[in-house]
Length: 275
Image (cartoon, rainbow, N blue to C red; front, side, top):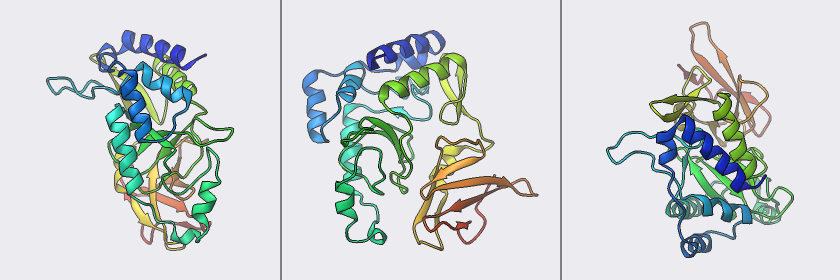
């Protein structure tokens, strides 16, 4: 299956079940504009070029300011301008890597696609964002996993491995989720008045959690940001360090317990209660 096949199959499903959302997908830009966007970022993979030859972002709200839904679960498709803007912004905002030693930049330069750099690197090309500073991107670095889909958190950087092996794999997984009504990215598809809306499978809003929970580890002094990731258990959340566990208290609130780079479990010096 090619990316074009996967995307067209998904759009057919979306037009049937969520026509309002499907209508918000913008047509592709001309080749010269796509090449200009690539020139302003980094060399794209062939699949990424194919991706932007199929569409150019989405209208998140209609002309009368009505929500039209999300084409991808939990994130908004980016236009070429948004890709360039996000890439430029992330290149200018540097993540702290002093604790990783003076040789870390050289280590990053020698890495392959899929490896954690603890920072934004030019070969990361954003294509969808959540509105809270986090985004999905294609890792275009060389290596066996070139073209994989990964998640970048505003403060946690690129902690965590690839979510999907390619844009084709990701797009097809979204189609199957919408078609069957199954969970994707911790969201269950829900269509209201022709709009696709993802409903959280957790009793708390993960986007709210991700944008607000910031802690500094008392063991390794690095900040922790919570972000939903693929995990074997629906009671586990990945974080900027390794992962966290959600557990309820006798008072019906949630305590977030994390494990940091030093391998220690902690709650940031005090319980992080969300509820």
